[in-house]
Length: 302
Image (cartoon, rainbow, N blue to C red; front, side, top):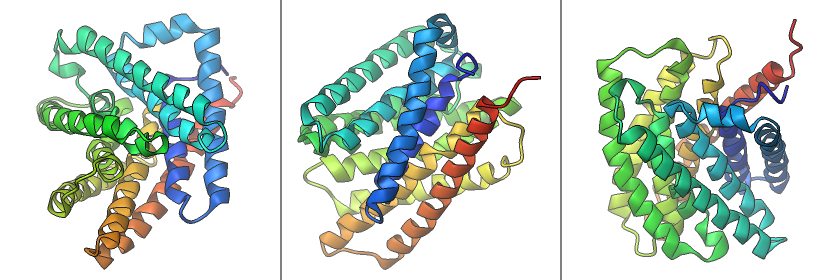
């Protein structure tokens, strides 16, 4: 079972951890449940890394697996915030180590795949590796590191704008193989993650700028949701990891934007309604992907 664990399992790990943060405003119990569920997946991933390091190294020769591999470090950043109230210094070290790990993976990705550019090898997983550092901005307040979070926000937003045109050109110009089709769900993640980083870390925020980002994010969300609902009955592929974090972080972006606007006296009632709807969809998708992954991983081979 450990041998068959794929790198994309880091996606549900990240998505489940992020779901706990999303649900924390409703229930501390659900927050804890999501944290433990995500930690279990992290342990499985560590088991694969320790037991089969060569398989991991081989997987990192693929731009798709390398891009999605960034969710491993993003998930650790997110999970560190669960530890922070109890072990602040330990959580801070883990958080910083995850940021460094993500940055190193990004440098490797640029040297290995970007400099030897091939449009056919471009997938939405390129968003993950390039924009994922915005997770630093989304979690920075837990450690009083808002300035670092602000820097990663602007870097990630610039990377999103660049990658959006490259990834979209690839989808328009070339066909997508069936196992990679669910990756289209990642489209809704990068800008939504930037929004959360903006709300959490940037000090002098603009409501107009936030609403512009939120409008574009909502359009990408609707596009991804329509595409992903059509893939629910597909055979299992590790790429169904895209049902998790992208939809969770989109709901989080809507939730946090609505709360900030309300706190500043600029509240929009409709945003709260959309937040509830997106949260329900996120919960359903995470459960769907988590269960399908577990059934596949623990299924006895004939």
